[in-house]
Length: 416
Image 1 (cartoon, rainbow, N blue to C red):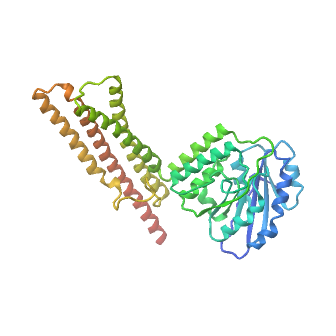
Image 2: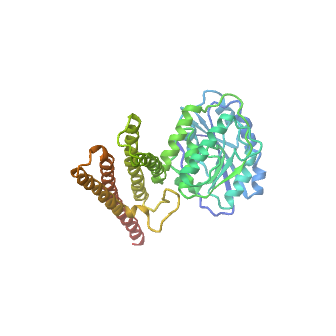
C-alpha cells in the first residue's frame, strides 16, 4: 500500500483494550541493500509478539526521498505500508510521518540498516504492557554490542549529560530502537526532524515525568558508510539536549553554572583576602587579574543562579502547571531559596554600604588608599549583588502569582 505523506491522517485509539497493535516505523533513506532484510525480520516477529499480548503488527516504511531502489523493494511486500517523501526531510521527520499514519496503540521504530535487532521488540512491548510509557533498547547495556568506539564515547557523554540535567539515570539516550504508547506521542512533541530526534525524545520524556525503561539489546555495526557525522551531529546533540532541558528546568543548567562561578570566584577572593591579611597591599599583574576574575565570577554567578530560578517560574507559567524544579532535583529547604532573595539582597546591600562607610571613616582617619581598595571593591560588589537579588525576588513573586492565577483560572473554567 502506497500513500502520500501529505494525506496522512493521525489515528488514535483508546488505551486499555485487550487487543493491542504494534506499529513499527522504519525510516529509510537510500537503504536498498538492507531494507528487504529488515522488513522480513520485523514481519517474522509477529508470533513472538502474540506471546506477550500483541495481537497485530503493522509495518510502515517511510522512504525519505531515496534516489535508489529503497521504495521499490519495500513496495514489493504486501504486508508493508509505504509512505514516500518526495524530498529528503530528515530522520526525525520520517519517523513523525510514520507515527501520524500508524494505527497501533504501541508505536515502535528502528533503523533500516540492520544494526538494531527486531527480535527484541517483544521484550520491549512486554515492558510497555506492564505500564512503561517509553521503552528504549539500550545498546550500552547489552553484552554483545558492536557499537563503534566513537559512538560509545559519544553515547557515554550524552548519557551523563542527560542524566546530569534531568536528575534521572539514562544509559542510552540516542538509541534508535524504541517502543512507546501512542497516547504519549503528543506529550513528547515537539521533536526535531534530524538525527537528534532520539536524544531530544529521551530528554523530554524524563522531564515530562513519563515512565521510561531501558532494556538491554544487541547491536551490530552498520555495513557501509554511516550517515551520522561525529562533529556536526555531535554538536547538534549537545545543543538540543541543553536547550530541551532549559525548556523544563532552567535553574538546573543556569543555576549549576552560576553555582560553579560563585565557588570559583569565592576561592579566588579568599586567596586575595589571605594575601591582604598577610600585609600585601599592592598587587602585580596576576593579582590584578585575580581581582578582576573574582568580581566578574561573583556577580555573574549570582546573576546566572537568579536568572535560572526566574526562568523556572516562566516555564511553569507557559506550561500552565507546576514543573519539576530545583537545582538538585528535589527541594533542599522547606521554603524555596528564592523566597529569601529579598532579605539576602538587603543584607548584601547593607554589608556593602557598611564597607563603604567604614572605608570612608578610615580614610578620613589617615589610612592610605592602598590599604582600603579591597574593602571598597568588595563593598561595591555586595551592593550590586544585593540590588540584583531584590529585583529578581520581585520578578519571581509576580511570575508566581501569574502562574497561580493561570492554573486557578483553568480549574475554574473546567468546573463551570
